[in-house]
Length: 330
Image (cartoon, rainbow, N blue to C red; front, top):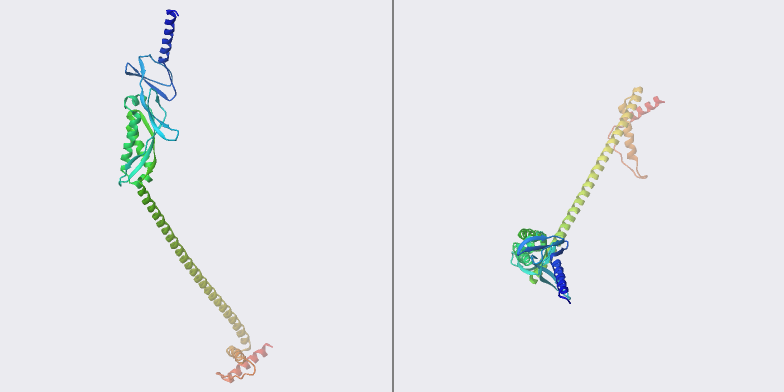
């Protein structure tokens, strides 16, 4: 092989290496920080980018990747990458012990969702971004949980998540990171605390059941008393209305009888007046006859003694007057 051919091949390989070093293809949602002679030069966006080989060099940064073994166990792998992922990333931090305000040691693990919005700050403002976010999350979680009782921690997860997100987002803003969400996965109190909470829960349920039972009995008694009261009122109202109606009926009957008697007396008086007889004697005689009929009315074979408090002559005179009246009418 001639020296010229060897030189040509070497030159061709050198050109290919230069092209490979100078041509950079950046994927969507990725970025690359380029330094020229160790100083920041520019940030490569998605697409085809050209740099000067051996002069422009990508700045590598530490990145944390969650891996899973064949048996299902997860572990974090730290790598040095020259490309920065701009997509939202989730960090699953291992469980840690925190102390609540009422001095209960609780085991908590959290998830944090964050996104790099400024690649330049994420490279130059912090040395190890994943480790910094993890440690910041752990310390912030201890501070937030330390201000709450255990019962508040178990019942106020949303409040804790919002407070953690606000604190972490403000702290990581300097690093070009946006914290979108923080979630508490598990809150595991000690075993004796769990047993005490279960006893308290059962006692609380029994208490509420007794209260509900007592309230039900109270309402039943009240409704029963109101029912009896209503029945008594309705019954009294019915009796009252019956008496009123009976009294009104008797009064109406008496009025009708009195009106009939008055009309009869008026007609008798007119008839008697035509005969020029005494109407008083006629009425007395009629009353005597009616009274005698009632006195003499009885079972056959019985003897009755009748005392006449009025003079017989008067009675006879009245009878005679009736006779004269009848004769006149004829």
